[in-house]
Length: 130
Image (cartoon, rainbow, N blue to C red; front, top):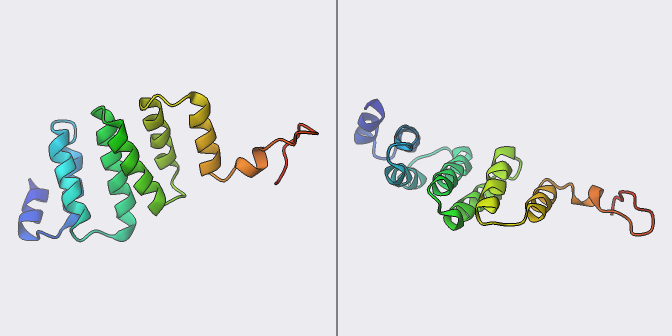
């Protein structure tokens, strides 16, 4: 109730909108998405924005909308590439889309920049740095 009063008082209070979304997400995922979408266009600290997209992706995935979840988690990753929880959710989304487990692991490896060190030299069978 306090967050709703804060938004009623300051219609540009994006942080309160995110908090409202968190509170209603289990009861009404569509209302939670509405609050998150509103928060994206309100005043919100820039470093919070990737986490808003993460929350949007999570709600879409929980409600069996993996394509929308993928779009949102990709946006979050593009804004903040060094957040491990984004890649964990991305893997869950890929599983929801029925990507092969190999593709999920490969994507995670390359997303974290480990691909170079894990490539195997055809002649030696050892990891190479190329």
